[in-house]
Length: 436
Image (tube, rainbow, N blue to C red):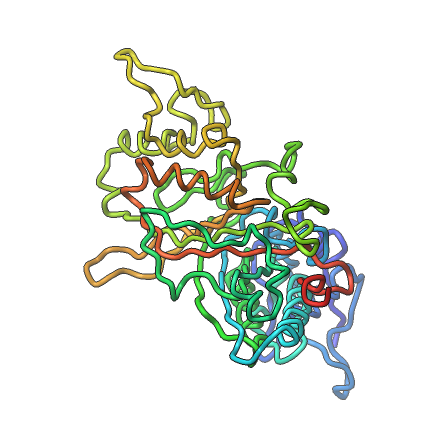
């Protein structure tokens, strides 16, 4: 059998600028190019894909040239680092959120073993490798696809593991809000996992692997699925839109801002948070159902007044572009505020909430259509901050009192999770808590 040349280093999984492929990987019936072989072989100048007598494992190649990974498949996030992945990474096109409760009788020892397994699986899958045990081949032939896996601890975790003294004050339960209609069965949990990827099969593969790794140590409490626009779907990078058609995340804090880390991540040393939370963050998770039938009955002008921004380009109603500072005092010819007093964008501004800021990183969701024809759809709201009592809580309290958008949304589930800093080489996530 003739040798088949594999892609060179310019199209390896490490190169996010690899060209988009015009066609899928080709292989004859009964064969295929494996995910592991493709990733490991990227950069080789020539690799034999077959061997006489079956002495070596290989995959037959089609006569035509093998197509390299597309830029979407080759994107790779790093598991090890100062912070966990999935916080500052760009939005992914597919996401899964899942919360677990430790099984009866499981404690600190079992939790440590579980986080060790989960961390190893996350590291492997984020590198485009199969999981260590019983891989399902769901993501076979795909690259890492910017997969991220993020782990967090809920308030109840610390009581179940005998670590109450290590529970952060910032993890105290969120206050009640008047607009809440929360389903307790789909809220909170001992452990929380966020999965994101730019390929739906890669994301599901990670979800299935994490669930299988839980074994007898933990059971699923709730699980939610989300999505965003796919990379490359627009002519140029732009702020994501939600299911109301509005741009969502225009005023997100940016890593380039001098106080970004101070707002989003727990400092390495501080009196308020325990040492194991250094370089970590707090995630508030809310399932927010959008009442789309009611929303879509509004005129375009009415929708824009509810939000305070133009729907077409996200610019404030006071004028300019999406990034133009909103003029809260501007009035029209009749003396009315151009940005209504109850507009969502006005009320949620940091400068209207004592500087409160949070990094929004949501997914949209659609879980079918009710018997009366109403879509069960909305936003899996995820926001990150160094302190939820100074980030999410003051903003939500103000929104709760007079946000025009509140008539068109319903908060149905909620959770708050302490997400420790990233794992160093040779460590697992949460090791400083569980073995400290």
